[in-house]
Length: 176
Image (cartoon, rainbow, N blue to C red; front, side, top):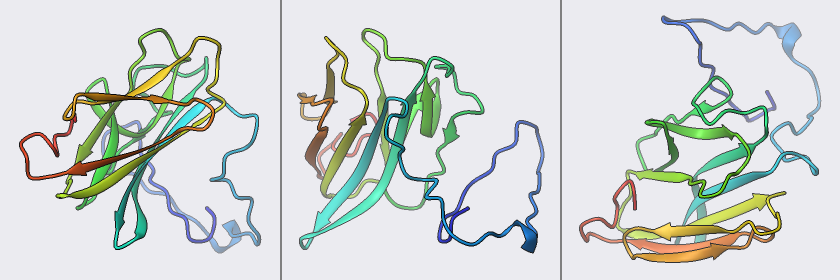
């Protein structure tokens, strides 16, 4: 664990578990293990941000990583979403909310369902960052179910999508 980082451990068994670290577990330096390595698996990062008083703040984010050894079922390679008390973003798959979805390679009509919760009446932005996703004939779209609009996602440079959550019915819907 790099200095300043945290992690969540989930067991595959019922009941509580424990993890222990000793002083001998510490090392000096940093490997930047949380950074994306060039030439790695195709993936899509979706970051939820807000822009208030000209200050952009990252609120939450999710990651979908693609590889032929990954399953579309929820398993131990996926990261269960741990919703906080404020705005939350998750990937909804097979009835589960995930922060990290390790997914089989993209197929025709593949859909990523983003789930929002705890949204407030204010301006937001999705920053969608695809990495190694460009393929001949492959297109991706962001569909906003509230505004009934869609935006083409450039699979090379990504997309920045601004939206507003108001007090209107459905504006803060989890399946917006």
